[in-house]
Image (tube, rainbow, N blue to C red; front, side, top):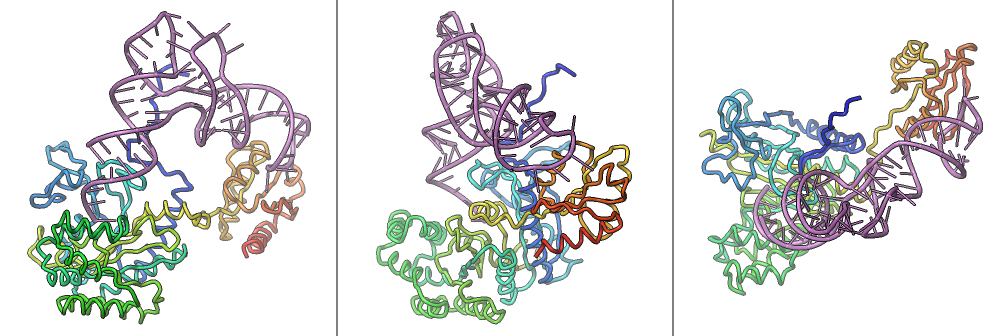
Length: 444
RNA sequence: GUGGCUGUAGCUCAAUGGCAAGAGCGCCGGGACGUGACCCCGGAGACGCCGGUUCAACUCCGGUCGGCCACCCCA
């Protein structure tokens, strides 16, 4: 015993520990996404957490905008932690595209860091999960990206969802037609508030902040709030834009038709011209994904097409399309609507320990069961049985194997079904079969 | 970045300017000493940190480090 003062255990603001329950949910989510990515031919990559600051900031990048964790390393280099996975991807493809070839499809799951203020669902260290196709302008890649989003959410089986589609060219055409093209960024920021402050609010915003005339605001909002089936919406918008949006409308049409051909339910795809976010950055198709049960948390998977990923690192033009799954936001949402229970991967058998001096025998039996394809955890000490069973209960084990002095003497074992509390006494030689049978019987 | 709220056992929450800070759940032990529900008994365990006011602070004030909420900003 030392009387040294102890250091208070704590984590930095915005940084989190993950307990097993939370971590299992994360792994389930990421594993599911990974399986879908691979099924479409996306390959995994990783890049360093730390990069040269100039790589991350690019030319004249505003450090304050990115809330960089930036410092000088031991060799005097100016370095920083990555704040997203897109910039590292740009550097990565610029550096390796020669050996990779195009099209290059990758997914990347990893932590990123931003020193910004924390709030609900926003941390300083958080996980991003991106997938992108680099090096092709074909709309087939856009369609595939949307299809991947669809397949991920279908595989997660967490209720209905809708992928909202827009195309930057449609809005660009509309704005050009209305004479607002020179104020695109401001207009987009206002449009973005549509769900929050409503049509009246945005109209006021457009007039006051952007300087649009009431007529301009009205025409723009009329186009954005067109309703109907996807093809009806597209037809109306084409008309409202007077032909200026034709390229965007054609692209959207092709993606929508592609998804239909892949048997994606029409209810899960919605052409939505009010999606403005990210349009600054994207140049074509734009996606956002909403969960039917909990739309208020916003998009849980967003992305789109960009013309040129890596122009600051290479002269080769590298267009691409991809999206990012909001892991933290999605998990928070699933917890809220109680969809995380199924995620707990329960181990199946707890081997209790009665006599510490025979621990080798318990180890041997547990190993035998594992060779038989079962998951077995051996309790590490000969604590009283009630404690061991309680532990089994807490860990979600379905069976407990109990072998004490009397069982050793008779060459038997007790196999206890945790749920029914029924204990079966069987011959030791039947242990594997009995466990298999009980697990099979209670599984369905 | 701005404003508001908040910080008591592992968790969720009480009370109080003054010698002994309570509960439920959880944990440990026992009753039934080899069977996880329930019940009974017993036990361990806390005022985030620093400073100030005061005869006296867990309680008031300030700071700090966290947490929550709204806004701002951004994907």
